[in-house]
Image 1 (cartoon, rainbow, N blue to C red):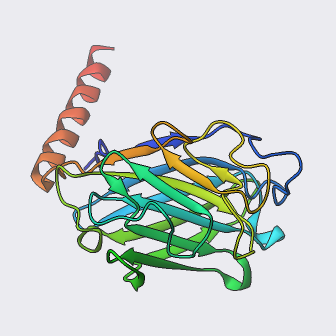
Image 2 (cartoon, helix red, strand yellow):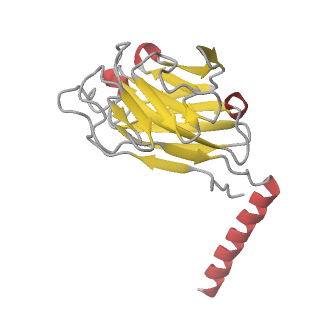
Length: 224
């Protein structure tokens, strides 16, 4: 059977788009791309950065999400100087993760007044010349279903509580020139990405699709 991933989207970022006066963590703070996919229960983010997180052993990586719920345009789950203003409202979910000390991740949700810890799902990362960080969050936790679209941005930052978005996925240019400089993701400002939750093909449809592809390949071989 051949699996179909028609609902996967890859979002690329410019390389080297970090201010020369700020540390890029030997490349680990340089966001290269994010692939977003989903299955029937979860949405997954796979982040690729331009350095080896296993050797530098530092860096914070964060995802701001707007689903159309009661969102904030003034803060986030970690209180960093990073905000998001989308066409469907402010940020109502925040994923904060780290790679040092064995790594970890948190999901925060906004209740209209404060940020609360929520159900994260899973998180893992793997070092290399380019490192990958993988996240999954239940669609139900985000209040998302088939046909919904959410807006998001991904940020790389330092370990300080006031450190900003040293790199931002949706901005092809330098995002900030100082560690504590405020950063806003918006359609008219730093940029935003969006992802639509598409229908998942039924297992029978996948089987038929796989059989059809294999049949075509076999026909081509016979003709040769």
